[in-house]
Structure formats: structure tokens, C-alpha cells
Image 1 (cartoon, rainbow, N blue to C red):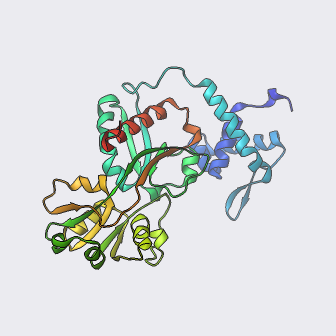
Image 2 (cartoon, rainbow, N blue to C red):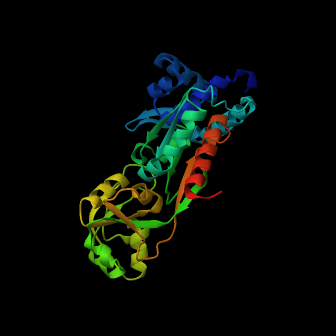
Image 3 (spheres, rainbow, N blue to C red):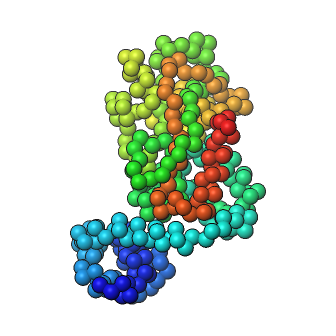
Length: 315
């Protein structure tokens, strides 16, 4: 094949087509008409001598040749992107753009307020689109549809870049009227009713199985090692909801300390140290290799890490 036949734009179109598996969606993303996108697909098929995408009951399905090409094309485009990337740093003072950040309820309430405060001063034209873990899949992150994800992750694709924002301990929140405050021991803790709260990772959640200790998380695994089990009255994925439930009932919620400290000035709630040793949790930020060298993303990632260190007291 003569290299002069290769239109670099066609490789961009192929990359998007293989991400979207849909001609219409690919056209929308590239701001092209659907006929123009269809014509580009025909040119790609001629170029590679392969159908590349075939319509099936599952939609547009890539051929074996297309799957072989996908990582190669992405690598080529990454190299081109790095080559043409402006040498000037991102200018936050004049930038106008939206960053899409997937953040857990925990990260959104503890970390992002400080980040947003800094952005209002340093980058007034920048907006944040904060998405929930259920809104985003690992594939969305890999394709660069989301700028970064901030959460606790049990598993992470090896291709992702990641950094620990902070490590946090656990605390208990109880209503100020809860009689357990007079004798807060492991024994009374186990006799009480609890609110379980967690949303680790990404994707649509599934129902909780109370007997599956490993999937319940840090608190219940720590108790299981002692041969103990707590009574869980409510399962929720929202930290703010858990705090309200505890404030209005004789329940206990065991949650990350930085989340609990949001209620330090609330006279209706009391923060206590758990009567069981629970391993530290790690709040992590991860992003696609496609965005590793992007100046704007590098700037925001740095601001998030700086905010995390300030909040957690690490310098």
C-alpha cells in the first residue's frame, strides 16, 4: 500500500467507529453528517480490504481484522496527538471548557468542594460535570469520554493511569440521643442496628447479599476476622442519606472519617472511633492513557492531588 493513499482523518474516523460501534453516534461525535460517516466507512473498507464493522443483532460488530487494528490505530493517533500537542501549558485563566469527572458520593462531598473553590479563582471559565459511578463504565474511561474518575476501586484495568488522592480511616456516626453513647463498646456496637453505605468502583450497582461478607467491604471483613457480624438495617449507596438516617434514628453508620467530619458541627450527631480496627481505605483518581499527556487534564489532576493533600493533612 502506498502511504500517500492514507488519509489520517480516516484513522480518526475508524478509531471513533470502533469505540462507538455505531455509525450515527460516531458521526455525532465527529460533527459529521451520517452520509459523510457512511462514506468514510466505505473508504476505510476499501483501504483495509475488510468490512471492519458488520451489522448483527447486537449492532455494528467489529471483524477480527478490526479488532487487530483497534490498538494499533489508537497508538498511532496517540503518537500524533503527542507530536502536535502545543508546547504552551494550559492557561486556566482564559480556558473555557467542561471537565467530566466521575466521583463517588464520598469524593464529591469531601474533595470536590475545595477543588471547585480553587477553579472559581484560577479558572473561572471552567465547569465541572460531576457524574456518579453508575453513569460511567470502564470502557467510557478508556475511550476518554470521562476526564477522570475518583473513587475507591477494588479492580482497575492495567492500562489506566492512577494515583492515590489520600488514605482515610473510619469513624462512626450516631445520633446525639442514641443511648449507646453511654457505653460504646464492641459488644454494644454488635447489638445495635447499622446503616451500610458504600459504592465502590463503577457501573450499575446490584443488590446486596448480607451473607456475602467479602462484598460487603472493609467494616464487615474486619468484623468477620474476629468471628463477629453486625446487624444491618439499611443498605444505601449515598453517604449523605446514611447520615440523615442515623441522625433521625437509633442507628450507627461506620464510614470514612473525612466524610464523618463533615458533620463535626452538627449538634445532632456524634463522631466516635469504631470499636474494631478497620484497614485504611484508598481514594484513587484514574484516567485514560489517551489523556495522560493532555495539558488541561494534567493541570486539573495536579489541582485535585494538591486539594487532596491539603484536606488529608499530607504535605
